[in-house]
Length: 401
Image 1 (cartoon, rainbow, N blue to C red):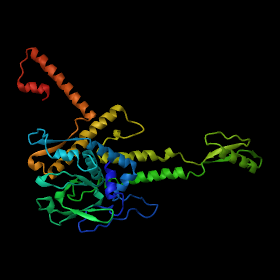
Image 2 (cartoon, rainbow, N blue to C red; image 1 turned 90 degrees about the vertical axis):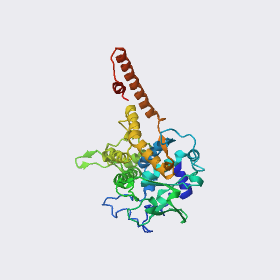
Image 3 (tube, rainbow, N blue to C red; image 1 turned 135 degrees about the horizontal axis):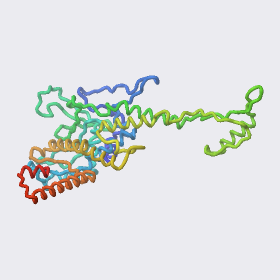
Image 4 (cartoon, rainbow, N blue to C red; image 1 turned 135 degrees about the vertical axis):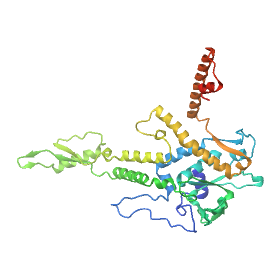
């Protein structure tokens, strides 16, 4: 989807500009990725967020699921009175934001960039009469924001930000002003222009996941000797070794068979295992704990993802509801609110909002609400027929409205 689009045009898998996207003074030194020495902890380089997204399946699964859920919303334009506006130029943009992407793809890309860098950009230049008919998501890891150096007493965003530079893979650059961009920031609570990425808080679990995959690969590729067949024969002088002929026959028999078949020999031998049971290394428990840390950082439910045990239909159903109501809907509404403001819709008293009412899990909530309201209405009817006189407030209280 959107990732292929970004990779094709901007080469986001390159390393040349794979660094922090804020540049206060025109340069930024990226710290060393790892500690030297095998006896110390080895941590990932959090500046390579896109690389980790591509290579670590647990991270990508969480980010992609979040992006898919956010991009599933249907955009609807409302006026200040809450009425749906059916004719407006924004619908032309929604129907065709750029030549090769749908609106869902654009929101997907913005969500992925936000998840990786806590900041996302889209090229959205204003045409005549303030109309925007093009929106192209840009790769955050190739963007550099140049601040003005001014203090906090600024009324407009351009008082803080001088320009935003896109660094292409062919070493060329292109500068944009803020009014040409949709500029989304997920604040870390401290930094206004340069928020810390969520990936930085996942440094330890992502490092452990990489180490865990490396360990499993070593065990599979370099298994070595799995055990010893030794002689059990003995006499008064001690154990009797296998003869060279017996050793050769057993070895040839072993290589000629699959490991699940039985070796037949006349020699009296015993088996001494040399391998260590993989499950006792707790590799999968470590992977599960690290994956849960990623899921928690992005506010999703563990029941949305594959797992060996604990997932039931009821758990998955409630996990989907919880994720939408607690994370997806609020974060998507915030994204649409910023888009509304930066596209100039808010100045006209218009608001673009995401609608999730078509999601099956949320429709079930609507059905339960309707059934509860019907039950209350039936109760009110019985009370009224019984001759009990109620005030309007009492009726509303019974109905729960």
